Structures are given as structure tokens and as C-alpha cells.
Length: 61
Ligand SMILES: Cc1cc2nc3c(=O)[nH]c(=O)nc-3n(C[C@H](O)[C@H](O)[C@H](O)COP(=O)(O)OP(=O)(O)OC[C@H]3O[C@@H](n4cnc5c(N)ncnc54)[C@H](O)[C@@H]3O)c2cc1C
Image 1: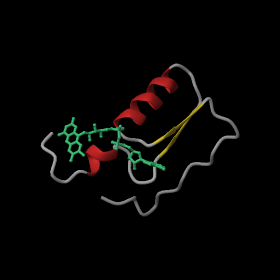
Image 2: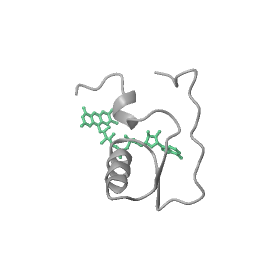
Image 3: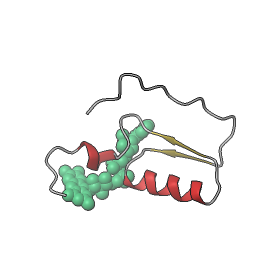
């Protein structure tokens, strides 16, 4: 898995209500939940959305 070649990081806003580090299972749920409640949320991920589960090559899901 790799980052799409034409990927461009979004321009950050000046302020957020919540900054979530890591878009694994926990981060995705927290970020989506807070955004659903109306918060301005920044979700920061160093690799790809999905975290450990999406990058695991040997997991039986
Ligand atoms: C070998 C293995 C097999 C597993 N198999 C299963 C299974 O079959 N079924 C199942 O339900 N669960 C399984 N699990 C457990 C499951 O992977 C975890 O419970 C789940 O992924 C944890 O989610 P998380 O969001 O807490 O962390 P993670 O999924 O680890 O996500 C953390 C994210 O944070 C990012 N991150 C970390 N530091 C930074 C930083 N400084 N800046 C930006 N981003 C950062 C990482 O890149 C990652 O994407 C397995 C775990 C392991 C290790």
C-alpha cells in the first residue's frame, strides 16, 4: 500500500476543536464522532487511514 501519487495534504484551518493523532480504528471513530457532533476536527495520519489493521498483511479478519 502506498500514498496515491497525486495526494495533496489539505490546507489546515487556523483552529480546531479537536486534533486526533493517528487514523487507526480509535482515531477514525473519535474523529468521525466528534465531527458528527459539529466539532472542527483535524485527523493526522503519518501513513494511511485504517491504522494497523489496514496495513497488516497476515491478519485474518
Ligand atoms: C499482529 C496483529 C494482528 C491483529 N489482528 C487483529 C484482528 O484480526 N482483528 C482485530 O479486530 N484486531 C486485530 N488486531 C488489533 C488491531 O490491529 C488493533 O486493536 C487496532 O488496530 C488498534 O487501533 P488503534 O486505532 O488503537 O491503533 P492503530 O490501528 O495502531 O492506529 C494508530 C495509527 O496512528 C498512526 N500514528 C502513530 N503515531 C503517529 C504520529 N506520531 N503521527 C501521525 N500518525 C501516527 C499510525 O500510523 C496508525 O495509523 C491485531 C493487532 C496486531 C498487532
